[in-house]
Length: 214
Image (cartoon, rainbow, N blue to C red; front, side):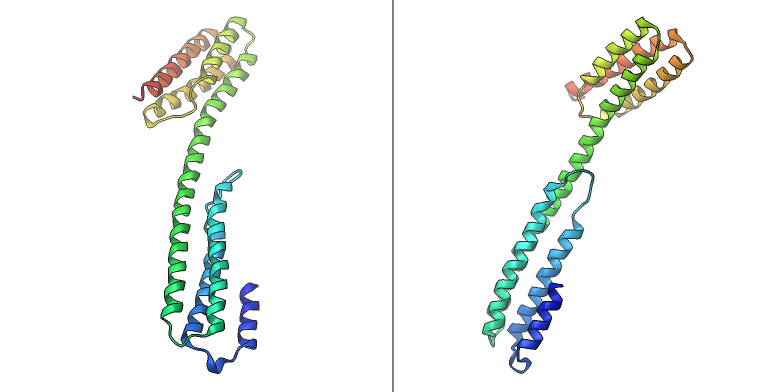
């Protein structure tokens, strides 16, 4: 919409016969700044939840567009014969703005990746805890329920962060919980008891590795 209005005013109000090259350079930079602003809206990485960290990149390109529009209109109005001043100033504004935009864009990517990793880490503990909690209610054996509750407390209080060194342990924990659910369904209390102890050992080994960073 802006480009349509701007071009209508530009070509209807001006005199094409006395327009110098510096004027057309400013005309081009104004269009370029607006395109960069639009690109920044669509290029930002999208994810779940509140991605307020994306706002600075859009603000930078919006500010670049406003500054360039102001500066460009001045050069269009004065219509210099030489191109040096108009080109140098607007190139400098564009370069600084684009560098700042790209820096913030890369920082946003890093932030988005960190948030996704954090969500995944929290999800493992949350899902494991919830499954154990439901299994403690599912069994009618009070002793087994008590041991599952103990297992739940250990898992629920475990660190949410993770590392590649404990990925295999987390996979084994998830598999053991699934096996525990099957054992409870089959009313195999002996196997269920062994699986609870196995889960506790796996969780404690995971937590120790994370604590010792090994």
